[in-house]
Image (cartoon, rainbow, N blue to C red; front, side, top):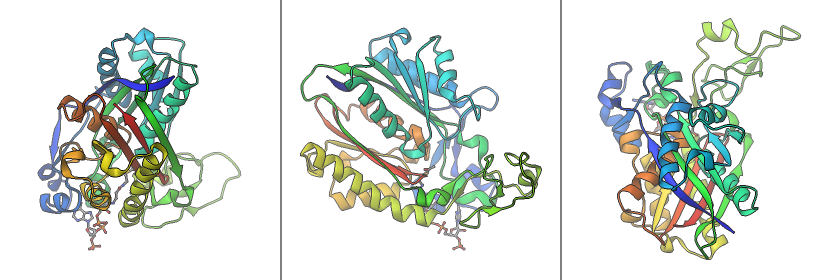
Length: 350
Ligand code: ACO
């Protein structure tokens, strides 16, 4: 029994935010953003109307319909996000509620930009083992809710956008079709290079300009998850050591793609469509160059949506498929790298 992607969908909020709009809030320029990242615009969710789980539900409804099933046929949900509706419970149960289904298990995963690859791999194992027939994998992010819209946060803020993507992973008996392999990796050594430290139980104040947490231990217990001090010092935004992340990304992306090739007996030349996580257009171009994959076999849409973390691969995959760039029988490779650090790849015979 193999597992295939039977249906895929994506949702992006209506509100388009251009680079020009961000220049009114922080010291940045359209030229800087385009030159360093390739991003021209991104979408921001509607405050108080949309959440990570509502966007995920919109994408899921499309994926479910395209899979030719109904929400009642879903056996299990895997929800990947770093920007959940609540700290707990996870957004998976909220998505389940939006879809009007009950009882099935919902698993929230926190592997950031690699979230969709991890989710796909989990779904693949459940389907292959015969435990479930239809697993819904969702990646959704509401980044704009927690970004620093001042010059201090510009290196992070200009990159991220909101949106959601979803896939129904379904059992198939078609020989040689579906998810051929997945590989998952992580190295916690670099956790603080790209993080959103607060709220958390580390008990420190992370100010973003240091690579280590500045620990304090005044109280024996309590009062450390989200303190007034954190708010006063505005230690409530994501931190990224961009150059460090970039360096690792251009090394780990190709490693994961090559591992997927080796596991399936293919070479990068056999890949009909590479869909890299949309972290930075420059990263995608460096990977493509290194693996000698021509432009028409790589799909990028970071120009329009920015980096949507766990949603970026399903959004790009779905958009490429909708444009007819992924056809039945094509060899599709997905690859990601992000906070954790985490990285991985999947090879799919469509
Ligand atoms: N506008 C104008 N200037 C800026 C901006 C901005 N938005 N952001 C930073 N700068 C300035 C900096 O202050 C710095 O100025 P200085 O030289 O006077 O100190 C200069 O530009 C260079 O800053 P860097 O951060 O070194 O810029 P870099 O060329 O590395 O580009 C970027 C930054 C785009 C973030 C890049 O490092 C990158 O893409 N890194 C990887 C990001 C990534 O892949 N993340 C993983 C996925 S995300 C996830 O998992 C959640």
